[in-house]
Length: 112
Image (cartoon, rainbow, N blue to C red; front, side):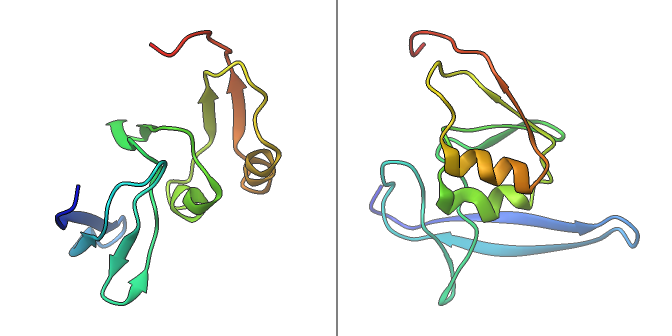
């Protein structure tokens, strides 16, 4: 993915129903687990790999890393469902505790 891609992010405020669009430019290539997101000269939130909205307030993604934590905080998550049999990493557990996010682990063997 050597070319730049543009996408739109919608920011809304509930009370005034004001909507603002801003352009976010994804620069560089897809690394092992995240995209580098740059707006102008400023580094911004980095979504986990394969992040998408499934339904209003329901999201899915690949495994999040510490670089994704500031992005995840903006989602106001209440729960995470973890489908891997391996123990959840300590750094991620601390992030969940500090943000009052509940972890549900269902260790499913296999990758498909």
